[in-house]
Length: 504
Image (cartoon, rainbow, N blue to C red; front, side):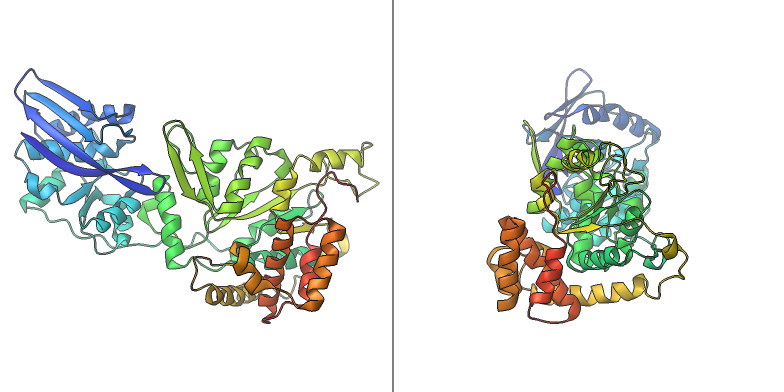
């Protein structure tokens, strides 16, 4: 007898249908798994056998063959345990086999018959809803699956509870969707004294989702400024929250099945490898650049990162997606991020201070800054100097304006952008490009002359030209004006620096 159940395999955040075929036939007792399973899937035989024993069932003394079709697609992960067990229960006549075909199942079995959480429940629920099927998943992730719409969700605590539901003796209630609760109060800009130009650049970056680089000596407040950026950003839109939560679900980082509402803020250590930043590894998992999708990726001590890791960021910054190419897999993850980076001007950090700088200045500064390649440097919209804070600034009372006031201006500017790009898949000025950018960000005659003259003197690339226009568009949005003039272009140009290692 052959029964079938449904599950999924993951390619990025996309789900591929897997047909789990279970055959119980006469022959010597055996339990064979075919269909290109990895080690975790191959070990499911022992977990399924132990789970059956825990609930008082024994596998039939026959030849059991489980085929995971299509057979040429690598099957990875422990979430195949539950569909294999359900297929066996259908083949043994414990559960109605025809009814099981109406569900997509995923979950890891414990030796006591419990169903443990697995990665990817949210995208699996969305795929099940699209194919007009229900979803069977672990109880702790039922609220995650409930966000997929009207899909029928059976969130079972154990294999026995699932059997009792189908028998009608214990009905599983539909789980309710839950949001991630705010994890403490966000840091406030009011804590930072001085650094008005850096605060202004931070506001512009938040308003247009622009990439930002802060350079200054140690202790000048670069990390403090970056840590307060989440308090200036608007909450995730519903569509954005679903995108971000799907990535975190595939990565197994969606705590308690709660949908994310706050924009991600990821700050990996500078020892991070290329796979940890852009994705990859044995199972092509999402990296930090994808986990920060629709949020902020903060790289502190930028030149200390591996050169290869920094260069791998160039493509995601330009295209908004991270492509992981392997011999046996080609996986794409969304990666529309706002890059915020901080660095010292040189290794000792006191390049501009004659009293503290080392005897290798200024060459040490040129060598240190040249660790960042010109193409990566050119992809950063705003470059701002963060000087050392003077004792006079530290003795001042707290500033009158905090994150709440700045966040209100940022929200107003973001609202203008949402309205401007409502007929496109673009949400912020930082994403505008090509003909659309020229339509929305063309300056007036005075602004155009200034931009042309400055581009010749500063040797701006075509990418640099366009990024100046994007920043100028954001500056105009912050001021509530439609036309980009000379003032907006001048301020946008002030945030562009010469390439590292270039004199002047």
